Length: 303
Image (cartoon, one colour):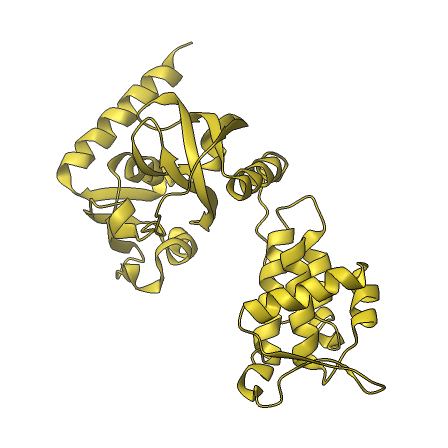
């Protein structure tokens, strides 16, 4: 991809005093004419590149462009490569490995055991997610509409969207786009999408901003929860809500207090602890949990 090559060329120029066009052409396996066009594109982007003829000639970044010569420190480069490696973990291609190799030219420690940050974005659904992510990426680049069947808590429906962003958040993948059905921007979870396909219809890009992914925006309702947990649940409460979410009582029980965002999710979450948890407040949800457990007992009581 051209953008990968441009980043690779810029990385080389930041790390070396001077390089030649034949060297760049051989390294990136393209023609010298292509390299010349790439250099022109970098200049148009505001990078002050100088070319010199002669025995000691070549391509370099302007002498007084010192602040950007140290644009990426060792630790910053490692963070970038960790992110690229994370993207490669959910994709079946090796495009990000190739980009890492280009970025790390002249700095072999970036690609060795000196890495201190490792990111893996893959999941149990990797076999289903990878083709969806690739298809959505292509649709975004080509301005093509996406069509799919969507399953939400409220309904299942056929959707057609203009896709703008792929987003990884809350340990899941989402696509942000303009929904024809709702005539507004909507966030769709990839795991709930079925029969995903790219339409032949193209669209003109709208003025779009990044979605507000804050908990307050996505989960506006707050439920004040008070519950009592067995001490054996301590590890899980810490993992999910932090060390300050409970008070340890004299008898060893854990008095849990926190804000929860969704009633149904709260009931299901409490039930996962079985007999090791008791919901104290709100009182209305205690009654709903009692009814849910009673209905469940009726099912299992049947012979």
